[in-house]
Length: 457
Image (tube, rainbow, N blue to C red; front, side, top):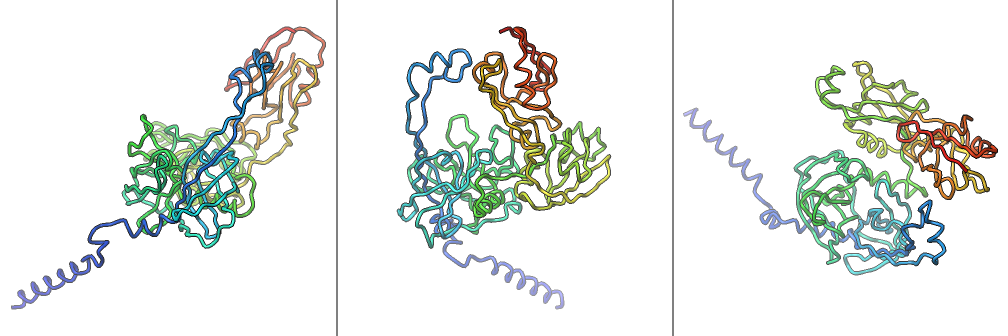
């Protein structure tokens, strides 16, 4: 009898558990995305951007033929139109989109889902992260999407991509999160993308990738395709980077400020992990470090392995920069790393690349051998802008036209000596150029190699 009662109780409990999973609405029965779309779609807008560009001869910047073709008339203006999407993030009309949709646009028109239209201006834009923030003129009480913590997103979650593909009108496609922290693959930009198989096509750029709670997971940015159409491999800029970008726009920033690491690094491969005595390949190996780097000042050295930044793992240089960018300039982040195989932690302040020493920018315009040469003294800011080695010092070529281009100098060359005279500051080049000789020898560093340019004037 006692056994029968136990069986009956088990059956009743099982029935109660089943009852708790019974759908409670028609939308649940139909497995419909309609409620989410009704909530999120009004905050996704269509963007029409127009800019005027100058057409010029392909020989215009050629060091040999440029002057010849410059005499055949001025360049002609051409109107270029672009179409994309955007997401409203505040009721007063703050909209985020991709840089490649609105960057350098002279006229921007934004159309809402309810057919209202607004003129817009760019508040903040950055080519490298491919983001731009717009302000709609005269807008108020607009629908806005909440941001989700993109660090909490997991592979396999259902998502919706909302945008205006091919200009046919607002369209919704569904899929899942296919991957996280994607970098490389010729997609550049943010450095750590969310991958989705939700269909993304031209015109979807700048649109919303939303979760099943109607929160913004990311801004649709690019696809990986041989045909130009969606092959189910799309990439979105994570919401946490969008949050950091919008915060700078609200603060009135005129350019997007990224923290400076001052290091060169590489992903830890299986071979590197074995040589370092790691149980598995993870983290980022520091291969070069600038003495002024905040990492160097916190005690990190060449050969150390950075494991986490702000509590989040990093497994590529791009992901490391992404983590620093989401934390933002001025904040302090906990960094977990290995020094000679031993775990350590450091509190590192996120800083912008210092302008120390001053760059002393100089362009030679007088009738000297280096006419048309633009120079700067190397400092951390110059290193970051031009992608120079972290330990670079001296003087770098920031531009070469006219005679400077004809003798073979290029942007990014580090000048070492002119006719045997060491070059330490830009003014040293002007002084050396006054040498009364017909034979010249310029020692430079280019792409990690030391070269000598010889010429006669």
